[in-house]
Image (cartoon, rainbow, N blue to C red; front, side, top):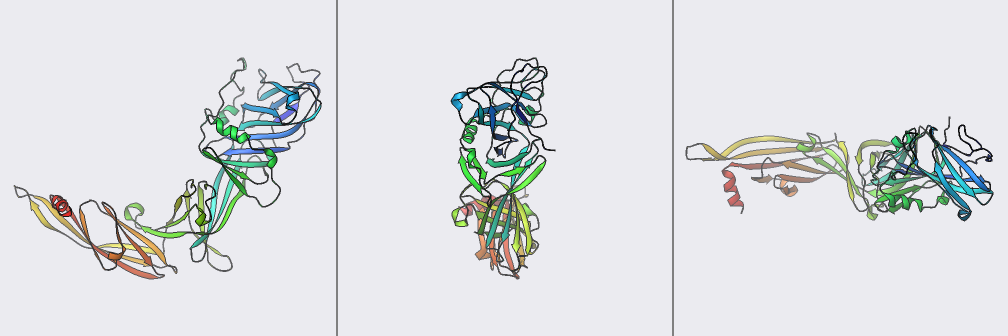
Length: 448
């Protein structure tokens, strides 16, 4: 069953004396706009409709029973004839729960467009993405979506949806304010002003400057992006109906042939014995992106395997907000078709040093490693192998192909970068000498 905030011109209310006030039928909403924040359980609702007024005093009743609306955030303004209409007060009748009453003085009779705004809880959105790699894995089609979920207690029909990326700080949780039986505390307390629930007042003011008359026509949906101070605003073209207790997937963007880099990494201390696959791209013009930041979300990656459009699943990764110009590296998980197996071939010690009492106080530790590498894929790959040492006092002798692939990363880390052909194997060999005890002093003098 649909549920809406009850809003009408009242003739009478039990326990309250509103006699001789004409009853006027309330028309349905003309437009609704939802501005949903990502970082807080917070949505700004702007509800526009025509109210038929009579000359003189009119009373308008608003009930939020069964919803998560914050009654302390209620606001109403006429969108026309503002010089002939005065909203004198909004009261919350004592001992009457979930009810507010506006008093409107009008110098004209007839329909007048009004906009009612309020904050509500229970609406949320999350971004997620689908990436489809080309057969050669050099480019990717990136499709973005947002999933809007409605658990606010209210149905929203034909609503324009806007999404906010950025942190917002609130003094009170909107859901807690909505569940209070009386907006300002006990029914015997005199209604008093309360602090606005948001500290980011500039953002709210900026939101109100956008005209609701821009609700789009029915055509393929796009998301219009706009900078808004420290926030970013995404406006979904057209309107959507989002019933209570429903979620709806909405398209965000579709970018084709984005250049990507596939990189395989091996680092035992970081990933264990597995090779991990990374996919990277940059949010800029060269990568056919860069118009706006990309909200954080989950990316599932597939690969086109034939001309019939069949796909193979390649992995998935969650990522955070990607600013314009920034690169993202996505960890797609272990790659079973690339194998790296380090083997310790020889271990010995040498060059012992002794103290005055004949005890060993320094020595060299020598280890010969052999790394066997297999690419079982039918595509070429780029592979990075990192080796971490337990000390910063070391020397390394690379043998064979390892000499060309070698790079020193920092004091205790080296990296080998390989380009491997499809279904190929390689072997890297190196001898690591580490210096222990007083041998570290000798190594330091030699290195200067």
